[in-house]
Structure formats: C-alpha cells, structure tokens
Amino acid sequence: MYSKILILRFPKTEIKKPLVCTLAREYDLIFNILNAGILPRKEGYMVLELSGTRKNFKEGLQYLKSQGVDVQNASQEVKRDESVCIQCGACTAVCPTGALAIQRPEMAVTFDQTQCSVCELCVPACPPRAMRVRPTRQSFF
Ligand code: SF4
Ligand code: SF4
Image (cartoon, rainbow, N blue to C red; front, side, top):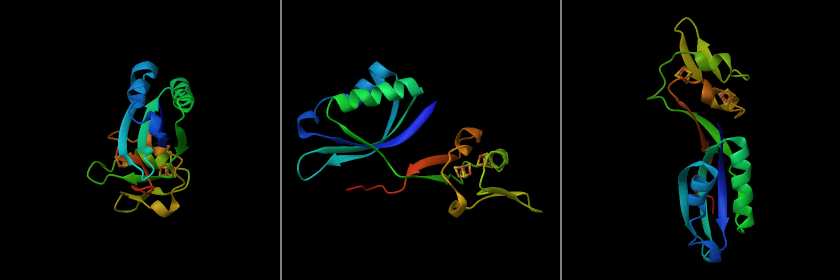
C-alpha cells in the first residue's frame, strides 16, 4: 500500500465536480480528507491522505492533473499516538536514525521526533498502527 498526503488546488470551474470520488471509484484509491475549503479567489483546496497501489496512485494523479487540478506533496511529519502504542518495540528494529529506541533498564520505547527523517518505515512495522504520517501544518493558505 502506497500512501501520501497531498495538497490539491481546484480551479473554480472544477469545484463542483466529484473528482475525489472518481479517484475512489475508478482508481480504487482510499482517501481521507484532512482539510478543505474555498480560497478568496473561489478556487478550492483540499488536503487529503491518498492510499492505494503505486500504479493506481500514479494513474489517479494523472487523472487529477488532466482535470486542471494542481497537486503538491504536503510537508509531512511522523507522530506517535501514545494512546495506541503498546510499547512492543517492533518499530525500533526498522528505524534507521535511532528516533525510536529502547531505553534501558526500563525497556520503554522512546520516540525523539527531532531525530526522525520521516522515512515512514515504522508506519507499516507498527502492529497497532500507532505511528502516523501527518501534514506539518493543518492550515496551508
Ligand atoms: S519515520 Fe523513519 S526515522 Fe522517523 S521514527 Fe519512523 S522509522 Fe524512525
Ligand atoms: S511498534 Fe508501534 S506499538 Fe510497538 S513500540 Fe513501536 S510505536 Fe509502539
């Protein structure tokens, strides 16, 4: 599964078209809308997390661009949901920077975000999905 957080800007002529629903229906992509609105000049914007196979992702993006939608990658960060983490330590085996580490002798799994390179390897490695990719800012405009 390939996943990215994207910022879409829609020309005002395209605002009412169900372009994102088409991504789900025609390209089998899963979307999660994180933020959306209308800009002063009437263009629409949307920040969404889009997931699917790489092939479908690429084709879905080509479809959006063919409809005049501007697509940009959102700057991202990885956060740990402390209420979900079970301290199993699986993430420390894949983390290349040491941002996730086991603190001895307590054996607590620590997360130092300042050392995180946002490589995203820990996201699929975490059994309960406590590690999550998020845009660095909720408001982009
Ligand atoms: S995103 Fe990469 S660097 Fe950051 S905590 Fe996860 S595995 Fe470590
Ligand atoms: S793999 Fe997930 S649940 Fe396990 S310690 Fe790491 S963040 Fe917590």
